[in-house]
Length: 284
Ligand SMILES: Nc1nc2c(ncn2[C@@H]2O[C@H](COP(=O)(O)OP(=O)(O)O)[C@@H](O)[C@H]2O)c(=O)[nH]1
Ligand SMILES: [Mg+2]
Image 1: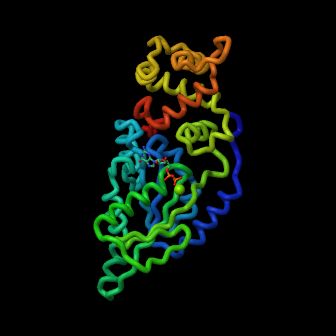
Image 2: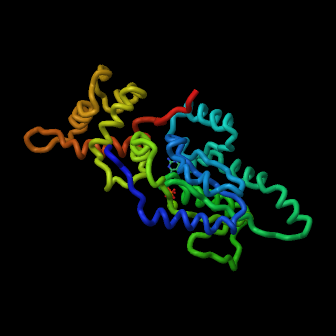
Image 3: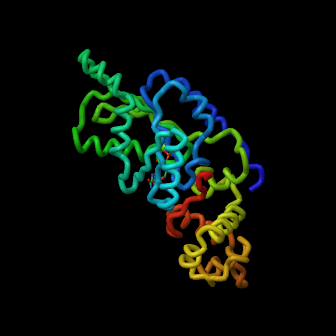
């Protein structure tokens, strides 16, 4: 992918929204995608969030390679970051998240209790697009609703969601970095769906993905598409043609419809039909 560099105006606006709302909140939950734990983090968050407790969520672990997720958990712990593996799909890690938020605010909660004050805990959700910010809020809210039931008279502005267990969450739109340190990061994010498909060349992207799978998860690729096991010397485009043929993506004259084949493969990667795959490993 060439020069995928841009910074849409709405992302600059979101950055301002985050900065302006920091003063109203008690803690930040930053979400990243377990398939791209590092590339899925926007470096600007480290500059903006300096004064508030922050919990980092590695979401979508159900889609990621479990062995590599363990490596990432250890890596983050090693560099002193508090990261919780989560799956909004299965519910993994959701309880731990709410208890960690409370822990990180225990001093304030104790003071409040002594004074008889009952203030909500205000959390801001941040992350790049499509990592599951809104889904996570819904997940937490459902759990909480099941426990304590509804309360009337809840003030709601556009993005604030008041939950029933004393938590209030501010959902924010996703925000990508203004530019990427390298094209590899942009590609990985595009595989996971963090970048709108309209602005990328899906066919080219798919060829890159197929080469990554060929080198890192050959067995999964072979099994999913029932292709000959001799793929180590095949280029991405050859693999695309092979899979297109297997899947009957053929236009009149017998030519392979590579556009359609690419869309299928990207879709099957994103929904983990090819298997649980992680796109990057931590440095040793
Ligand atoms: N498999 C899986 N899908 C998830 C998970 N969390 C969110 N999603 C899906 O990811 C997509 C983006 O979620 P959304 O909450 O809209 O992301 P946002 O842009 O960060 O708010 C949706 O299709 C969700 O269903 C998860 O833990 N596992
Ligand atoms: Mg959202």
